[in-house]
Length: 398
Image (cartoon, rainbow, N blue to C red; front, side, top):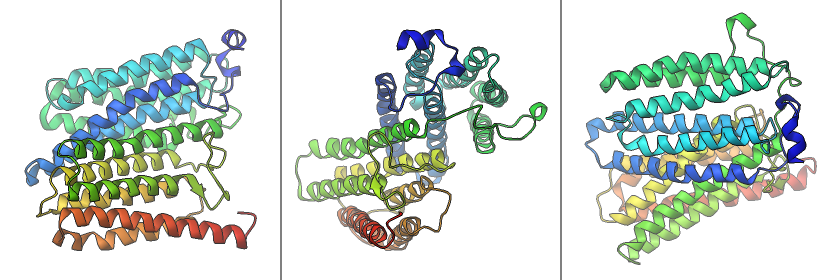
């Protein structure tokens, strides 16, 4: 099978129903990358408050850039056959480049800025350039040209930021990322080819394959909560405060898993193959919020285990409660376009409950805040599941 697909044109190939082992290997780099990003979030909580926003902004920029790479790679492997040797080579090169980016993260706004910018540009231009060459004579080539044009434009800003340094680096890189986000949101239009979206016949994405990749990346992010909480507990041992926070972190992990994988719209759990997932056009942005929320939650639990003594401040409360809010909002983006479904309303009500409870939490000990987070998330998961059951009983078509 692999030999035959290797001789066919790239445009004639179709993605496999399930993710390949190489794609799982690619995600290993993101285990390291997410740990690096979690470390940056933890560092942001310990710095002087007047610089918190700028430091947090840098972390958000890096996280979004890494997500752009992963999401476009997942889209590539969900469109064409990832078993092809040429696509495997692209995945491996991107994997190594992502590793370089992750290693450069701590000093990306310092002495490694040029390395970070050049590596990022090579990845983001190299992928659509390969597609442009490999899809000659195929309608899907137009999509590759559009993506290449937008990334070429943003590359000027990335390189300029890497060279300039200081405040200019942050401005240039923020603009570059904004260009890429705008391009992705609008379908990568270019003036000389019109602004119309490509037909489905030109680019056919396997929703099942893409949903499975989302599921796998979600599980990798979820492991970050276990890693942060477990590593924090292992140093002092099982203290009372640490044990309570560890239980709360475990409850949060189970709640995240339950809320993510169970769908009232489809009436079934999302399987490992993603058959129960019905992705909206904003699903990729939803995954960005989901993973970002999980990382924030993981860091919050880890910080409380390391320092369970009061007082707690607003930044830690914002991280610990804001993380689940981001997760719930992002989870709603995975649903179909209708945001008025009972499932989406439940997710929004859960996010609202967290926002209402968060402000008074600055008056409580850190361990109590962690316990409250775990209890609220568990309650949202239970209510969500009950709503799912009632919806399935009253409307069998759900």
